[in-house]
Amino acid sequence: MLVRDELSGFLANLERKEYQTDRSFYLTAFNGDDQFTYDRIERGTIFIPNATLSVIGGIQPSRIIPIIQAMHRGINDDGLLQRFQMLVWPDETKDWQ
Image (cartoon, rainbow, N blue to C red; front, top):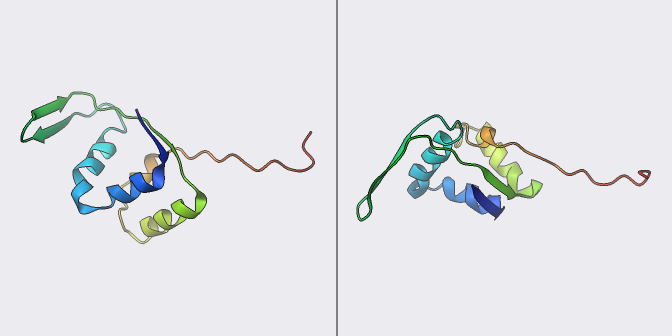
């Protein structure tokens, strides 16, 4: 499980070239039925037979809108954002009792 208080920084990092392997892992870990292999020079190879990951965090609408707009323009339109389940807590209406 990955818990990030602020998902905008996490998503921004995944857009950087040096994080493409990480992005690939997050795409693979969505289903939980695929394997993933990390090759590390000093630590050797790590094999994950059923890669599964849950990501929980918060993000403000003003931070996610540019990410969604970029995706619609074809930037990082690889399905990563579509794997997130968005939950919005509505503002309380004045007539609610």
